[in-house]
Image (cartoon, rainbow, N blue to C red; front, side, top):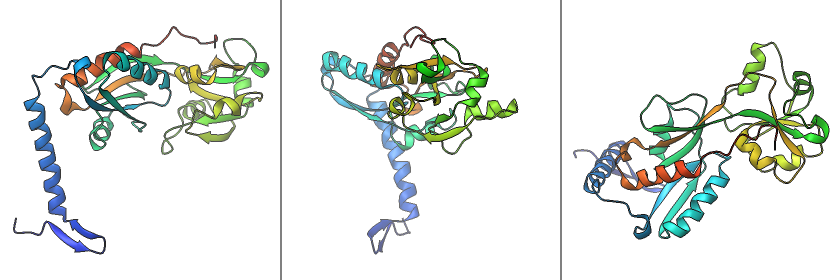
Length: 263
């Protein structure tokens, strides 16, 4: 190559920039070769073994359970490596999928992607959760109560402004946030028996408002719903296994009828 591919360092032999560049190109070539060789092969779940790498948005635990239960019966030799990853925009989806070698991701996006390698599933309505003992049994919450109640902010994107804050700022309003977390699990205990509110999607509320006094309320603001979408690695567009996984995920993740005000 007329250039060293490895150099000796305190941490052992390390690849040079040329070696890293060659590695990326060769790996890409081998990937496409593998896809070409197996492009006409059929995927038969009961008789195929192997693994898939998938990423799911935080509120999809029930769908993951359904997927595993289905495969135990119909595809017993298939294994799933389920990751939690941050895909905040359609523009960055392909980069994240390929960097982490993810076959399929189910994500929440503010707008629908313009690329061909996605599939829209459903709208995830945005509302808020609070204890019905303090906020009532109605289906909505007043703007006054929303602004006066202290709130916990559920956010998975620390580097971007909160959607609700931007909407309130447009109206010259502000809410009081006393805590911010990317985790959904503690919210049941945090919100119960307090006046705290938390803005969440309906799918998150189904998890939070389970076996307790918490209730999902419609917001007193006009906030567009998140778009829940399937995204897959564009390089694997003709992979029979990915097609099977896409169809299965689409069937299992169909949302239940809206529970707004009924949780």
